[in-house]
Image 1 (spheres, one colour):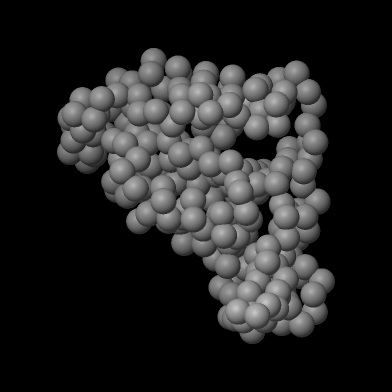
Image 2 (cartoon, one colour):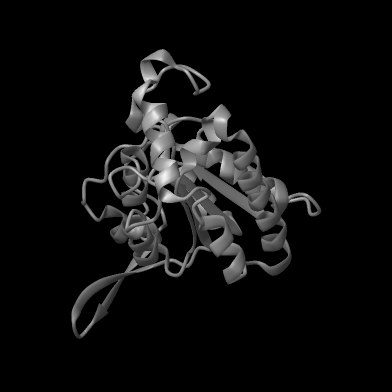
Length: 240
């Protein structure tokens, strides 16, 4: 199986990408798959200008000449596309939204009695997303709708409390979460999907809300001192 991974975090070694990496470990443990990882932040992708030149040409390419068309080729050639990203303001990070806007060449205009609509080309798609919130509470609604409308039914794995993956105090819980993702990858390799109970297990908050919020306040209240977090100092909104 040919797998394309689009890392939408601005960092190569982000918390959400650790989850995706663990999932890939399980997916490739017993079966050899061809895996390509693209770090979207490193690509030169201009914003869509809404010219609809892609619909006129109908060749699955954009008229803008940058790094986008090679990614579109990869999307069409892949047996599975895994999008990896943190939630920024209830949506995907800006550079990844630009890429999503530019997937318009993979859609086709569909005329019907109600007007002109567009129909996406079928691509087997899933996404793994994380956020720093203590629970779901609507945080992932926007990204779920975006992927549903653009790619149809997509497997979504949405994980709150991802800062536990970068904190020494929660290393044991983090490893347990990564282990769940490795096992889920193995399951996906066998079944081609995830059982509902597996998905629920991956998405369940690791800590009770109150306990997590107390830890969160402690971690981010002392960022300047870098007491608990590994790596360089980062503003609160840039961790995931």
